[in-house]
Each structure stands twice: as structure tokens, then as C-alpha cells.
Length: 431
Image (tube, rainbow, N blue to C red; front, side, top):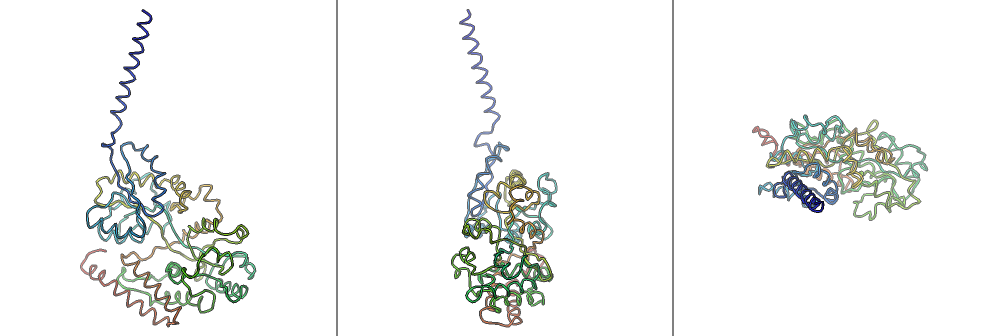
């Protein structure tokens, strides 16, 4: 009887276990029943974001993320093609200078109410200039994912040899330091590198001025304003005085090697170069460089408000699930992990309180600079305008073109680019 009882007990336990397992399987959504978010991510971010998604999917068992990595070089065209074909994803990483264009196409969902009700996305915790890049017209269309701004990287040892213990804080101090370094390093070497094929250094200097680069709600160019003319003259003066080589970055070769050799002492660049300088400079030079906020016309100056944001397309049928993923990626702890994986700087002040980031002496200049980051003009034509600005500045440097003539020509060319915008706004259609 006892043997029969034991057999009956084992049979009962198996039945109970099988029933529990069946109930669990019935409660968990099947693969086909799970809601799928199509998420497009650009560049290297697409390589590492997959490491952060399992935790989100565990916390949201009814949701799975279908990730597609898109090269930056093809991203803009691919998005426009998807828009034309009605195949846009649910969620996408978008460079914040692209956001006005896709808002103008009426492809983006407004996120004002979602952000206002969120317990995670807190607008006041974001650097204001970065948050502002996600506002088009009177609406919020993106949430900052990571940020980019430009600061000074400099050879602290060469600056000291030139007689300066601290980096410059104003344009006047900067000019004196540049002249002193040039005297110290002599012929064949320079005080600063300003690659002529990059528009970002000139843009950063221009954003330090109070006058806007475009006027009348982006209808007309304002490069002939005295503020921009002063900026262009200051920029061109670095070449005219022999402080900067009239070269593009392709002519420099290896920037880190030339920096280590003292070919130049100042370099305006972004946060990715913290890791590059740590890896690429030789050990004997690791104590000889530092970062500093950009000098401004009369004191610490503004800089660019770059980076990427997360947007939801209006065509999405899974907007609520996509918003939950935005909230997850916006959590300060997740942003700190993302920084550790990519070196991309967090857009929230809270994330900067993490021990690793807060203790990085090279990142402190970026923290200070982000409080004074300013967005570029919010028009879909901006990238074309910025390239035209760079080409005009290069012509001034290489040919000695007069500043007044250069800015007048630049205004005329940019006004032509903005003709469609003026036509649309005159007819009550927003861009």
C-alpha cells in the first residue's frame, strides 16, 4: 500500500507541476502575440544599444524590439525614402539638426503631453539648449538621447611655456595666448588647428554672439549683421596672423600624432576625442593635455548644441510602447551605462552625478559648456546653410576676400536657399 501511495503522490505532483507550467505559458504572451517596436539606430550606437534592450524586454514582457542599424552616411536618404513609401519605423534616432525637417514634413508625433505626464522624462533635468533643439514651432517632437558640444582641447605644457597657467576665458585673452604660443613654437608649427573643411568651430564662435544667424523666423539670412562680421573677422584673423594653418583635416594626417608633436596647441572638438586622446597620445604626453570651455567675446562663451534625439513617427501603431522605450533609455542609470559603452555624453544633469563621469577631469569642461550650449537655427535648410558658411569662410582665408563682400555674398546665397520657406510661410504653411 505504501508503494502505491508513493506512486500516487509522484503522479499528483507531476500533474500539479504540469498544470502550473501550462498556466504560466498561457499567461506569457507568445512570440506572435508580442507587440513589436521597429527601432532604427544610426552609426556605432546601433552596435551597442542591443546590450541595453534585454532589460527593457524583461520589464515589458509583451513588447519586443526589432532593431535596425543604419549607417549615418545613408540615414537621411533612407528616412526620406521610407517617408515616401510609408515604411517609417515606430521609433528612431534622429540628429537634432534633422528634427526641424521631419517636423516640417509632419511625420513626427508631438510628445508634449507624454513628457508632461512622465515620471522619468523631466524637462528641467535636461541642459536647456539641448532640450530646445527638440522644439519645433510650439511643439516638442523629440527627447534628447545624447549630447555633443565643442570645447577646447589644449596642450597645457606648451601654454605654460608661453607664460599662461590657465586657459583663456575671452577672445582677447585667447588672442594673446595664441600669439605667445606661436612665438614659443616658432616657424613650421602653429598655435591652433581650425580645419577649413569643418563648419562647427566657426558656428560655435558665431553662436556666442547675441544676434541670430537668420532673422524673421528663419526667412532671411543675417550674416551681414555686425555680430557675425566680427566673428568671421576673429576667425579669419587666426589664419592671417599665422596662428592656424590654412589646411583641411585631410591635409593634417593623424591629428593625435600632430597634437603630440606640438604641431598645434589648441583644437576645438567634441567629447568623442576624450577617449581618442587617452588611447592615441603616447604615455609621455598624457599629462600634457586638458580641456576647457570655449572662450567668448567677453568671457566664457556658448557653443553648439548637438547630439541625437529619440522620435516617434506619427505613422506608428505602437506609439505607447515606443514611448515606454524612450522612457527606459532616458533613465539616468541607463544613460550612464550608455555613456560607458559609447562615450556619448548624457543630456541630463542627474546622469552627470555618477562617480565615473563626475570624476573624469576631461569631461568637466563639457559639463560647464553644456550649460551654455545654443541650438543652430531651426530650419530644414540649415545643413546646406552651414556648408555655405564654411565655404565662404574658407574663401576669406585662402583668397583674402573682404569681410563685407563675403557676408554680402553669403546673405544672397542663403536668401536663395530660404525662398521656398518664405513662400510657404507667406501662405500660412509651417516648415
